[in-house]
Length: 469
View 1 (cartoon, one colour):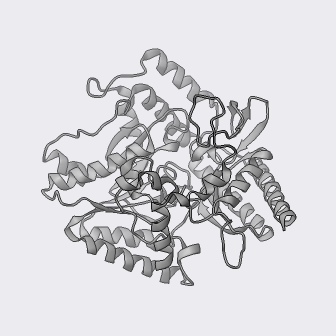
View 2 (cartoon, helix red, strand yellow):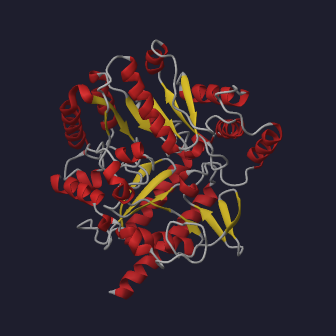
View 3 (spheres, rainbow, N blue to C red):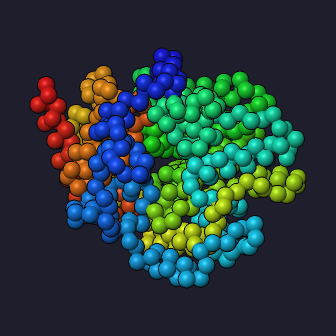
């Protein structure tokens, strides 16, 4: 365990850790475009249009969007109801700064979010990273309003991802994304991850939960009066691939926070608003965090929008003090984004998409388990609802990832794309994994097609491995 955690720290501080990126580069020089891309010189298809769960490139080739873009397009593509709302709102007004005007659209959006989730207050932002930063700032302000300004230490997991801004990266246990900015970051990511496949070390769920809880309590207590709160992904996303904690862990972590009077912040940017088969993933364990961060599926790819759900006691402390929140962003709560997000939420409810995510999630999970029984490259299937992850291994006995780490992920993504299926890479520098997360609108027939395409891609990977051997 200590060796694994030490290796994570080493990876975070060294550019050498960037194995998956270097393995995927096609060329090191720009291709003549002025646009800075993820990988210089990499050739990607140009997107043309989308319809439902399918995306089409400029050459007319169809792809089943098996990952909702970046686990974002919860309603699929070109939804006519959402497009109509976008057009109608754009004809009225698209932007008004919330420091000058209130807007009917943002008020209605906050009301709908509160009704759907049970939270009394909502702060609107533009992106998941911004919303994470806002949650941190609201928590810091909460402590300052209470006269405890020294509480500034947050704790998060050693395998996690919480955003691309400095606060979010300080929380993130994602070496590939941390290393460039490491000199500016805090080491908040010190909790042992609830990642049984690589960290349980033979413990069953109950023993692993007890171990995790004990170590989390020790970490919290080591910071004493400097501890500010805990940030957790109820189901992990980009750093490890749908890492799902043992059933008792999230309730135990929430209890640790309650005992110490510390806010629990749930990062549900990827999991929130139906993705896992419940409105919030934390509801699977009957946990009510003090703050919840939403993004991605809130705008469903139709608009950049995010939010922080905030409990009464946090807002009450601010209201009793300065009665002012200075944090904010230029486009936060703009009328166009708010109107579109409201339409997305209405679609999620009226079309029973949370229930569909639960039902299609069972079908998807069963199909992935069947694939795992036939493809040795799959070390584990995990996740909830329509957020499923595949851990990829070069050896199922030793559970070794690819060599270099990330190479199996890259191979899977490319093999799937070549067959008209999009899946999401979810390797944080210590493992190989992909996310399978189609839109919440996916049908039974489309789920079967996804599984068939993935089966074909995995078979192609196996053939390539045998050929190299």
